[in-house]
Length: 523
Image 1 (cartoon, rainbow, N blue to C red):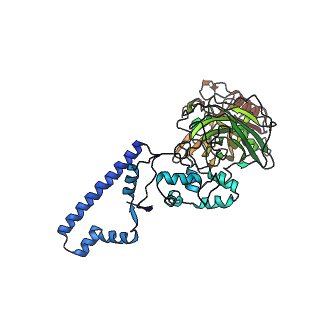
Image 2: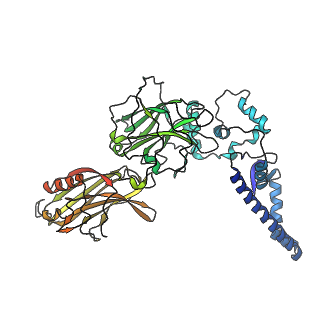
Image 3: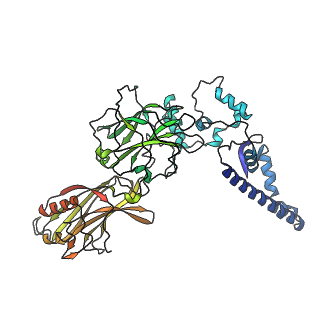
């Protein structure tokens, strides 16, 4: 075990590890030492039994040790280095900014190429600055090269470098994507009158939607303060512009200070495409951002989306600290209001997945074509046409973009002939299906006894999860005189079905919620 790039006289700063974590590492190193001793015993046995010196040199690995020593004369064993680093006790500890350590972010004017703060670190640790090798700690990726070239201005470079933090375990990585995840500063400082009242949060779910997809300790500090923002939709660009102005009187995360930034998601999409961030503001409880977070999204999709704005303290060597959030149901938003609004920050209220009654919307058109209504004796029998256009804001159990499809039955027929489904649309929370399902053999009287069941499914590897669906029927609870569980249509679903019956050969357009409370039926 070796660690290339570390000099013999250097140690690693492992002060951010807990005693338990350091103990676990030492146990691994102890096991490594035991394996070394076993190998040394094996070599001693070989020396006693093997008389051929060339074969002994090969079996014992001596040839490898000789070649390795020639190439790496100045390098030390990685296990020895880590063991020495854990046992090393610094005389004084301080917070170290990972941004400074990894990418050289500067907030002060350097003197002779060295920051005053960096000089103090050198004196405390007794190590030269050359031992802090950014390339060893964070290898540059091709994406880094693109990002650095794309953000050539000093201001944008500073913003890019200040967004390398991870708050809670997420499926997507917490690195910023190249498609605008960093906020764009407003061209001019926005001066506007501040409203004394705060906008009440639109919690249509009775809790935080973000809590469905996140885990971690969100009670480290008591949430307080408020955030000022505005929402504007640019119809020409088909772009939602979330302007984050400032926060006021937020909670203190560390010794009467916080290093806050604002992060946004356009839920239910929790992928890296949906995540946007402002820059980090250092040592303030009243940060001013004046930055714009941009989302390319169709206006029709916004009805099923929820904007989550959360404030975090950036912790360089640990988990970031949650300082509060607001959630805005965009389906209820007044888009004529473009002025900045204040909203109180809220704690993250846990929302049980079982309490979710709606997992998005489904957009469709439906019509009934009676026998011979199209001329020339066609169709031969009555036909029900279901045109599945799209789904909006699909809320999966894990969050983020999903692979989905829609399955349909005309009940009470649950045979394979009755079952139809769309193609699978991948990686989308608002998939477009554009699929028409046709069922024949109907008389007008049959429609009052039947039910069109449409269910949305999430294809996750080899398994599929039912997200919910709709049932279009007369909602009588009976079919051909028998009580059935699946004739449980809502008022809106009944309206669509009866409109189809009463208006033959005419498409009935509708958008219905994908509900999770469909009564179970015999398969």
